[in-house]
Length: 354
Image 1 (cartoon, one colour):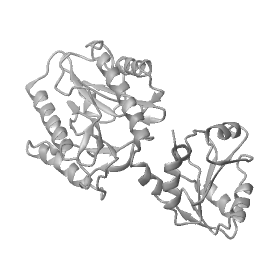
Image 2 (cartoon, one colour):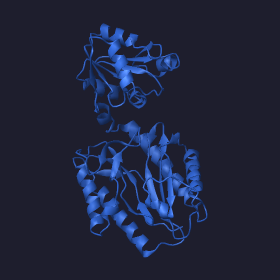
Image 3 (cartoon, one colour):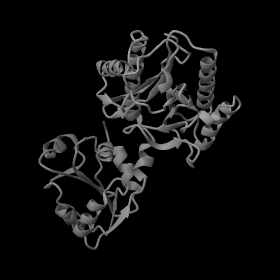
Image 4 (cartoon, one colour):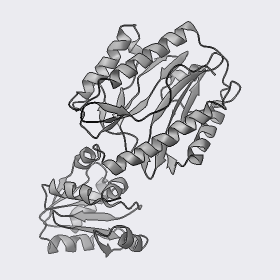
């Protein structure tokens, strides 16, 4: 993984003299090395990696484009020295992740240096995936598709939600996942009306919907997919709701392209449901970006002021939830291209009755 391009973009966009990156994921994004502690010190010309004894040797080997500096944990003395050597008067920091306690210690350690917030600069950069990131997301989604394909040959009425979730997670790891992208959702029958319900000992029965929301992570990059299946049979009402959710999803995906308003796509999905009198039961946003984290910026939501750009990876996941009865959600991952989007999710979406 070559991170020099990411670092160059980040450095050239800096309005401060330098920046420190202390959060684990952003440090990994820029350096290619994931540790639980450390600080990247970045100027427009050079980068240093401040690491303690646990990671110093690994940083020397895995981050060849950075100058490694050995520090004692929690000591900002070396950072203060770097600021003096480099003539830093303004230093950007991750205000979205740094605690107030750490910020106060930083202020004390750097008298005469003005601390300025990075705000969401790194999140905006991370929203546009490079070729390596897209390849990792594709790999994670392939693992997720294959796990689902195997799972639907094994599950049946009489199993509990917890048993289904456990088997699904086993299949993800057997397929090559390095971790789970998030806690698996497997909710059936009346529980399927809970968008983020947790697997329980509820025994799945004929006539139940089962909603599965799950994803693999591969080398830190996530996938995110939802499918809803029925056991034994599906009533006319269940089929109608499923059809409406699928139409809202597929027609929304067809509208995704660079420059399109995130808010307008969310509104369109709701309009499909409104024609059937069911929009009030769509209780969350249409989708979100993801990558190193399962929820990133931007989102396909009613309140978003963002527009889509080439390189973004988004979920599209409309749902209808009839309280205490059943729910349906269908979710795919799409990559925004120059002219539209590519669906990264291969699993079929027609209603499956097991």
